[in-house]
Image (tube, rainbow, N blue to C red; front, side, top):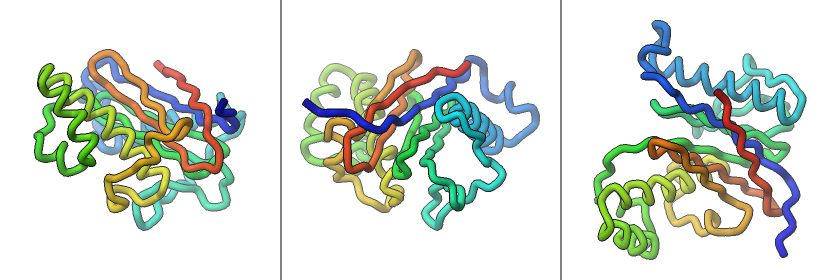
Length: 197
């Protein structure tokens, strides 16, 4: 039996309206970033009962956000469909959110191992939509894991760690939206999902 120790809190906000009508004159990138930071503040306050020092947030050379001398881990992700954050007492965590879209098979193939590609091809026989949905689950796991390692996309795509128990968790939402969170920890972790409206 696997004993789960640390917890990762995954907060998700799905946009119910057209995002362009919500942006209030901000660029789309700024609007999404602000929504993600607000979700971080909410998450830290709710789950760990601390204030998140958003004004001190920086990015390392590979683009991973951090706060100097802040002992907690966090990760943010956004897309036109919503925002997601992961927070924990573990520093090496990652999160990714993606919404439905058509993805070219050559892109899918490039980021998949041979075994993953064979599995995706089984979904292709069912339908292109099923293949895209399966790929988004795989992709969000990989991106969350790469964010957790701090390597970003430069870390490569053969990531057996995404299949280890207690390392990655995927959540699916209406409209084909997928969120995955990952942790690089000495022990498996428990993922706790929270939907914020």
